[in-house]
Amino acid sequence: MILITHLQKLFDGKSRVRALDDVNLHIRKGEMVSLVGPSGSGKSTLLNLIGTLDKPTGGEITLDGQRLSGLTDDQLTQVRRDKIGFIFQFFNLLPSLSCEENVSLPLHLRGWGRKQARDRAIELLDLVGLGKRVEHLPDELSGGERQRVAIARALSVYPPVLLADEPTGNLDTTTGADILGLVRDVHERLGATVLLVTHDRSVAESCPRTITLRDGHVVDDTVRAASR
Image (cartoon, rainbow, N blue to C red):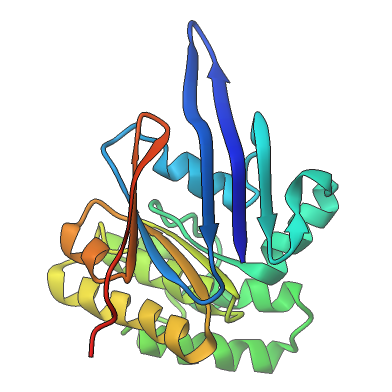
């Protein structure tokens, strides 16, 4: 599903920063993988490159058999729209749209009818515990509630690839466990490939596979025995 070969990402400023250096990974279809490491290790950079939000300095990413380096900006936009669901650390909700409108927006972009998209958005908002906040604007919600709206939006199209940056980081323990359960449900029911950045050890260890980055390098790749 996701094949990464000799991936590099450099940032030039007062000094050159090598955020990723010769990263090679193969994430198979349907895997649920946690990505861990200290701050500055390259976790979010890697997630952004896989999600086509940024372009690598060198190397190649192949997503679902499609080489990303050969695609135009319009084609990359289509990949994001049709194949990738994002859960951002800082929500990235549109402030002028209600919860329902934020969640249904990706569906409208895929050509869903208004009622069908609204019904799906309301269903997802209810799943994340915001059934009574459908018409609220993001500014009327707490940080944890905004995160749940962002998660509902990411799940709206049942994406084959789900990229999550600290999805439980701003939530209390109980809500975080509920959200992780929702992500796992999408993974199990639909066979979605999930890559999840986290600093929470318990969240990381709940995934069957954990990849550890340090200073832009993969330093460990642990696959756990399946639970019985």
